[in-house]
Amino acid sequence: LKISTGAVWSDAMEWINVNFFDTLETIKTALLTALLLPVKKFFTGIPWLWGIIAVCLIAGRVAGWKLGFMAALMMLFIAASGLWGEAMVTLYLCGVSVFVAILIGTPLGIWAAQKPRAGRIILGVMDTLQTLPSFVYLIPVVMLFRVGDFSAMIAVVLYALAPAVRYAAHGIREVPPQLLEAGRMAGCTPAQLLWRVKLPLATPQLLLGLNQTIMLALSMLVITALVGTRDLGQEVYIALTKANAGQGIVAGLSVAVIAIIADRVVHALSDNQKRRLGL
Image (cartoon, rainbow, N blue to C red; front, side, top):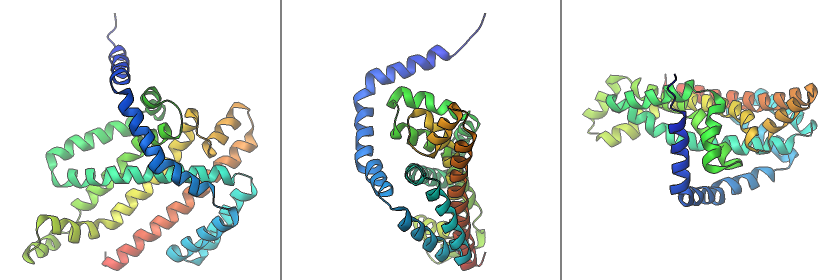
């Protein structure tokens, strides 16, 4: 004898598909038209030389020119490997997914920090999302939206949402009580206290949450190659199917290059903000 909830989940997916197909298709089309496709067109249209110069200038301005020079060399490695187009698709998918995850996760984290009862539920859901195997996210997404960039984005957002929520909640909770009291004494309303005291002081933690969200998004993008993306993750997947170690290692190193540059730049932003706030 066995008891399984598999049939329940299958019936739920079928019911959603039957009753909400048009609604889901409308949402998918709207987001593709308004967000995904314009961003993809922008990134895939960046010439490799101008892209390297832009990365060098951004990294140099934020984290010092030594890192800017190293970032330029790393991006040159991607271009020299013939993977510039795939890298730009990776950046586009990662960028959009991280933007959506932060847009959803930060308000949820603030809510969790300010309302303990809601926080227990929200953080419990985040615990569940963090412990699910990566491939599990693809199953309902493909069932509801089929394959493509939109499905990949939804899977990445679900996988990378947890750190955005957790770091936002932690940052709001760690604001010194004496500063909150000073804000109340100055006549701040709860909304002013949030926008003018809590969020500015929590910025370093929010940036660390952004950093972790980017890392998880990049790791998930390799898996979303299974739903038809044409990025560096697809190159890794193709190399695996053909047992081509060289192709797989070069594509993996290209993903690592993007992750290293993003990590150093965001960490530098966080450190700069800490110094500015005297933390």
